[in-house]
Length: 588
Image (tube, rainbow, N blue to C red):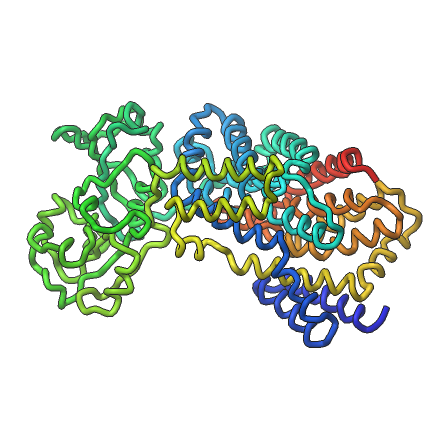
């Protein structure tokens, strides 16, 4: 092996060590590795930058747009409320969650599924009286297992498929992986339901203490007709919100202050909530509720351009000592006041009768441009937009789900490749109004794409310099390996890599090693490539190896040892099933 191979192996060790032992972001580490390989002449520009033109990487970028369209229209929240239901036991709750999560993750990126399900599962857990820690980690694991069932379920599958296309001209079908993925989802799901509840911690969810934040009162109305009419407070998910609580109901002028969980909602009921500013955003994501303040509907701002904004009144605010009704606030600022907080507490009384004082904090519904427009004006001491507070447009949810269904059908039937179907679906999301062009741009997770694309440079260097063949020879040097044992060795090594670095980087780095092992043994490469796919996704033992594991770490109040305790037996079980099934499906 020449100096280029030694240099590449040193780079590989350096990258693995930096990702495992430091907090330097993965995109910076892998881009630095790409730059060094290019500068030292180990790779030419074409090979070093090949990952940025890989079909798998482009498909992932396109699917981010499709997932954003589903999120903006509230389609995933609609599905979650439809499928989760009201189970009576913890095991039943896990089953009701694992099944739809696994199925959804097969047809859209599993990271996006978990991101959209976390708040829904937290609310659901509170409503059922189940600790969130009993559900959030199974949510992540179910999404990982579900993502292995199809080619588009996880970015890892798309990355390996892209390498198979570019190097060997092999195209996998959309459902070809289901022969192994579906059994893994069923067996892994059964393990989580039957055994996992004993291994999962009982810590509940992480929610803010309402007495430590600015307190607002928010009034909403039950839409008629709507999905909440006839449901009880508990069934509607209004009893245990994350950021607020229901204090009273105004029913035709009659005030109901003792709000029992089993009280049935009627058309036109006005519900009064008290809580943090995020409470207003949380309520807007519940289908069947609308702001009781009629002025919100008079705003000349489209739904996708709206957000919630907090402002603190300054000494030069023109309506100080005037009531909200007399201030003509909506006309002057093109924003509607939802609530007023004074000295950290909500101001009681009718909203229109409240008199402005300097230092009052207002919760507004306004346009996304409001914060930039008034940030440096003297009317307000502080202007701050709430993150992710754009209300979903539920009317467009069927449209977004239809686009997703057409994308899957076109790809599954073979009429279009996954890349072509994803391009059409993302364009349809924008053209149909499910998503704006600016939102589509912001939905693409550039750091993740940079990590995946730049890791291709290391993989190419491993192949071009002979380093992969050298590593493969070292693996085979332990003695004569049977095909099953060689496959198990590739799977285990990939699984170890994916626990300490990103799943996509592990797949890209192990692909050339797996190829070299199969060539030296004279075996069919496809089962080894599929083993890399499944092993790179099967990250259950640490929160670092897979994004979804890290996403539930905080909300579930988990510790590192929680992942080790439940993830180790699950990883062994999944590995044994995968190694047993892969050769039966694809053959050596």
